Length: 340
Ligand code: UFG
Image (cartoon, rainbow, N blue to C red; front, top):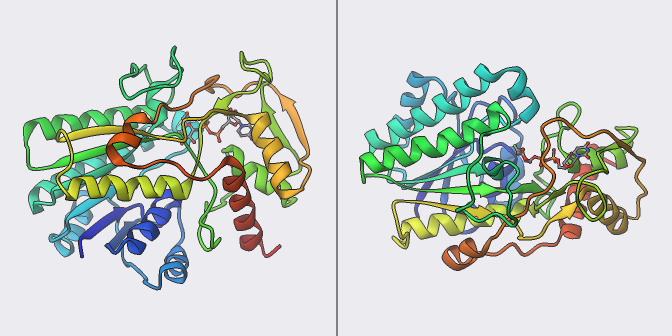
C-alpha cells in the first residue's frame, strides 16, 4: 500500500482528495495547521471511507516544524501539496502573508522531500496562472500572463520553483494540476467547503443565499463580452478534481510520466456564465434565488475555460459530473451542515 502525504488535507480539495485516495487503497497521512480548516473533517473522511487518516498538526511554513514532521513520514512514496492560503482579495491586502506562507511551505516541503528521498510530488496550481487569455479554451501551452494578485503570483512562482528544483536534480518527479473552479461536495455530504464568514466564491454564496444566511446574491457585472453579459468560468465538481489527483499519482508511481515535470489543466472543458450557474441551481433545487446585478468585481477576468485534452489523453481522466449535479451536491452539503 503506497503511503501518500496530503498537505492541507483537512481543507476543501485536500479532504476530497484524501477520501478518493483512501477509497483507491492508498495509505493517507494528512498534515495541516488547521488555519483554515477543522479537525472534524477527519471524522467526515472516516464516515465515508471507514478509515481515519493519521493526522499531524504542523505549520509547513516553519522550517523546524516541517523537519520534525518529515522525520515521522520519511518512508512516504509521494506528497500532494495543497497547503496554502487561497483568498485572492486577502492576498492583495496582505501580500507578504501570502508570499511567506505559500512559498516557505513549498520550499520546506521540497527540501525535506529531497532529504528524505520522497520521489513524487503533485502540486495544486490554478488556472489563475493564465490571467485573461486571448485564445480560449486555454491549453497548457497558453501564455502565462502577469499575475493579477499575490495569490496568483505564488502559484506562478511555485510552478517555477518546482521546475527549477527538478531541473537541478532528477531525484524528484512532479505534476502540477492547474485547477479551474472547483465546486460541490462529496455525495455523502459528510465533507464540503468550510463556510467561514462571508463567502468570496460564487457557489458558497449561492448556497448560503438559498439557506437564508445571505440576503441576496450579487452578480458581479452583466456587461461582459459574453452571450448573456455575465462572466464565464469552468466549474468542476470537487470529486472529479479529487480523482484527477489519483490519476496523476498513478502516473507517477507507475513511471508513466513523459518528463520529470508535467502540467495538466483540470477542468470540464466547458464554460458557464454566472447567470447560467444561478439558473441551473434554481432548476436542480427548485429554489428561487434573490439576485441583483451590481458592478464588476475588481480583478475578475471576463471568461476562461479549459482545454482538457491533454489530461484526458495522458491521465486517462475526464470530469464526469454535470454542473447541475455539482450545484445540487453543494446545496445538499449546505443543508446537512446547517441542519436544514
Ligand atoms: N461572482 C458573483 N457573485 C459572487 C461571487 C462571485 O457574481 O458573490 C462571480 C465572479 O465575479 C466570477 C464568478 O462568479 O465571475 C466566479 O467567481 P469565484 O469567486 O467563485 O471564482 P473565481 O473565478 O474568481 O476564482 C477562481 C478560483 C480561485 C482562484 C481565482 C483566480 O476559484 O481559486 O479563480 O482568479 F484563485
